[in-house]
Length: 314
Image 1: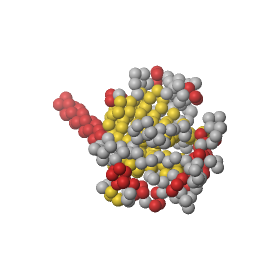
Image 2: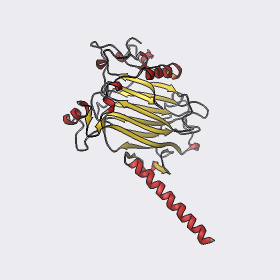
Image 3: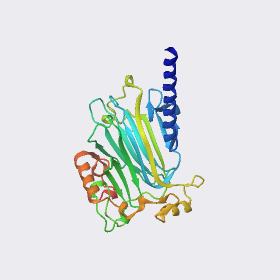
Image 4: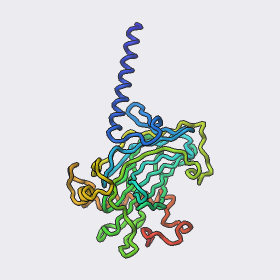
């Protein structure tokens, strides 16, 4: 009987080890730790980023890409998460970098998470918008994604667009999304659009109780630590940048921007129908912003007495 029990235990251990290897393999094909390696933890077929009083943690994609879509199936820190920020974002390198951010701002138990999006273009950010969500992001996994092509940057939650930043020079004759933070002006005040810089995909969790919850008035309660954000999957579907190429390699820029075909196959993200939202997506965007937008830098006259060019006409 004891031998049988031991056999069951050995099988259970082996199955657990196999599941851990499978999870590590699934994620290791895409991402690697970027800091505090011991705070990136595998749990079955899941990956967790952990924050405690000593450190947060993060990961970065193994490859860079130019245009495409990055997405994460993510369950946020449950319970009292005030002061805790989990981020999922794309960023290029250097002082003149481009960056597309999801930042999930924790809150006290029972109060809603806020989702902050932001764009940096040539090193300049200050384009924050915040929404609340129409579900509890700590109860189950939801998909957060950024679509990026030469025409637009789209932030999506479970395939619902919540924000669009459009390339004004490519929109003549296209649908207008005036409520999204874009601008149809194509004069000398045409807003900047992110240039073709290869980006990596990042995620991190850290303590930001100096600003994240009620403007920093509510601090992190470390008695609830460790705080864990849980990933079921991370996906990157884009034009993979050659590993041996510099970030300014003209040949790679031409390969990823000059054709709808490349070594990865058909560049679906550059097809004509991806250059703007569909009618259905436009309706989703209007709904999300009408019911869930809680802050928009475009209408913050205290911060911006002169309206940013991409906000003109709002």
